Image: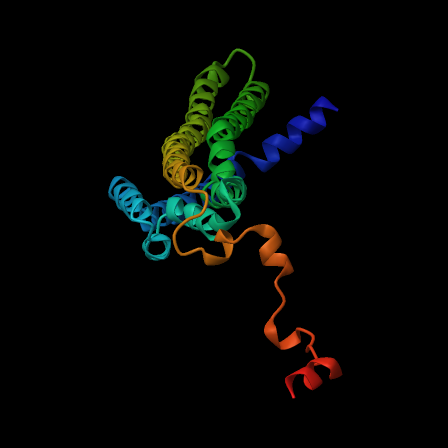
Length: 256
């Protein structure tokens, strides 16, 4: 069994590991560029947006606040818009709506980051596999050269070190390539995770501005339907469907 495994490893060589690392590095680079472009496109002045949102809410301009948030390209604004849509239902409904929108935005922001984390953790091990295969091949060449050399000639002792060192040098390239692939992936993963955490923290802060206003003003200006008591909103019947009251004969005779 060991001989078969060794023959398979030596026959395949370590070149396939290098090709695999090359493909993984290309995919990793594509993900880095795509995620970086997404995060740059979602950037906005969150501090300014928070101040402007607070000013519009204090003035009671909910529609203006919604337009301002919808004009922003940030993920933070998209979450708060979801809460503002449910503002007439109360602060609890707005908070639940923002929680759902925040979960969707988090999924969007963290998309494909797991690949970078997995590649960063495992690329050195893939490179090490190539090194192990190369070393096995080097010692296999050492055994062959020693066996083929005439006894006492000293030729095997001269050829063997050269073959071993050449194969080991080639095998170490796999480890080097694995590290070169892993280091950028880990760095990008950590940087992107920090961006996601910052975005979620800004979302929470911006959402609390809306919730503070809704809790202080449960009936916002402009929400005419919400200002009516619940029994009046449900019991009022439109004039067109109200029963027509007919005049009685006694009333007509008294009038005459």
